[in-house]
Amino acid sequence: MDWQGQKLAEQLMQIILVAFAVVAFLTGYVLGSFRMMLLIYAGGVVLTTLITVPNWPFFNRHPLKWLDPSEAAKHPKPQAAAATTSKKKATKK
Amino acid sequence: MHSFGYRANALLTFAVTILAFICAIASFSDNLNTPTPTSTVQVLNINRFQKKPDGDDEVSMTFNISANLQSLFTWNTKQVFVFLAAEYETPKNSLNQVSLWDGIIPSKEHAEFWIHTTNKYRFIDQGSNLRGRNFNLTLHWHVMPKTGKMFADKLVMTGYRLPQAYR
Image (cartoon, rainbow over all chains, first blue to last red; front, side, top):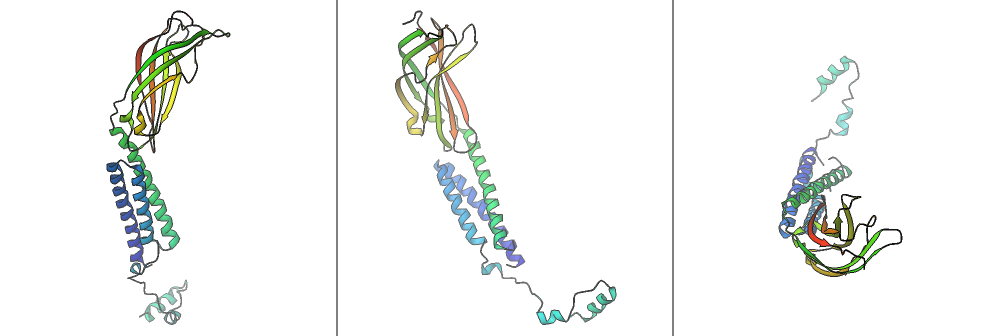
């Protein structure tokens, strides 16, 4: 999952759970059935799990652009010395 | 939210927290109910009224209890526990409460009832103070919820009196 996908997953999870909770409570209260409230909420939890937990493709629409391995080899990790850092900056794209 | 396990854990924790909230609100909604219970008790007969060998008085009586506790039930009620207590004052104790009968009402349909019975539990005094004693019969109930706070209340019925002499 990419960063945007993770944010989306978290938001979806929170919104859908709260929405189902509200619907469940109101339905249960109006029908006078505690059991109905719990059933609707349980259904909501299962639905939310199916939507937000698996790594669906729509969570990966902004994939991270990782550096190609051969390109990475040309730019070794900076050493503690400042001279190496300035040399690295000059050769970066 | 970077892994399956992380998301599953976050979801489960959040779902359970919200469930706790829903249950709290459901329990709070019981406060909106204004119950109007009614009850009458008729003492039909004093079957036995003796002083036991250890010196304490004991009474056995038959009574009719008729009550309508339907208004106590809400959507969040699991059952109602009801009991009938004889209450009286003696020189030794300012208040004596003796439970004579109890029952569990599992649903609203069963909450309007009429029962003809002898006392389920023995009516024994601490001492020998029951002859000619005036007493109240108080119907107590505990409304036990499916979730949350339990409400308890009572209805006092006055005007009962035990005989002057043993039978």
